[in-house]
Image (cartoon, rainbow, N blue to C red):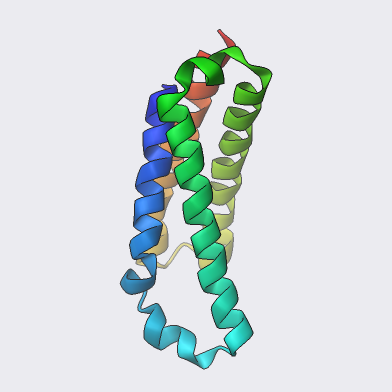
Length: 123
């Protein structure tokens, strides 16, 4: 399950590479000042790097994730991350947005995969 959680994070990282185009950021972010525009892109880039690093660690260093306190901490941290992301989705984007509703099942899968990964790590 740790590898599955890793692959999930890598898939979400790939999605975030495409996110700007999917959401039309080149046009839509033009209304923001330069600092806010940059913040959106910087935060998205930082998230891509983080999700890729965690995804690769979970996929290729499974034994270390399972056997070390640091590995268990990282799985726990990512479980909390995906749970909070799931909770905040409808708060920030509402229940009426079609894209928001599509994201909910994906986020539930992320929470479940990381919960299963944590259970595998603590066995």
